[in-house]
Image 1 (tube, helix red, strand yellow):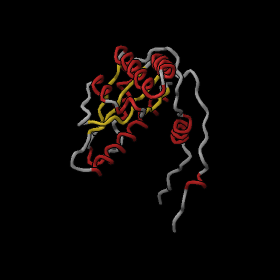
Image 2 (cartoon, rainbow, N blue to C red):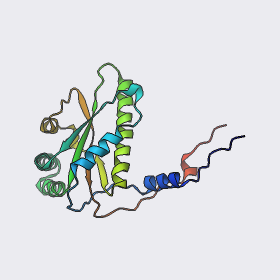
Image 3 (spheres, rainbow, N blue to C red):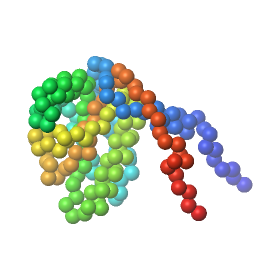
Image 4 (cartoon, helix red, strand yellow):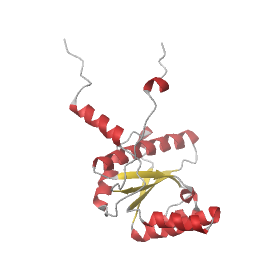
Length: 194
């Protein structure tokens, strides 16, 4: 007679710790992040589940010039919406972000369901990406602000907005501050059905 596997293993406890400790990080040390680490994280992250193995994700790794252009564009966008002081503040904050990666999802002109499935796959892939980088000592922030829907941004990164949508602009770097967080207890979230 075979025994059931135990759920109390070092590997599972390690995974639990990784998932619970990962945080969205908004402030980073000025330490450069090697592109080789980001490329490796992408290469591993794409092993996320995706219906019919569509692999809908595309990646735009933004170098120094593109990140500086993004900071200027966000200045313009925020200035148009909230004034020059807010625009200057946002541009200054963005200029301190050590790394940016734009993740897009291929659009599906013939199926809304396929587009939803592909977006879900991209979200699962981005969780893999965040967890991988967290284990490597880096924090991430997944933003979907107005810049990610601006035609000027698509032009800046060389993406075709009729064929791709931005799933997220991912900031990354070594955390300066790691925020604390809480989650609702399982009893508040789970409905057990007969």
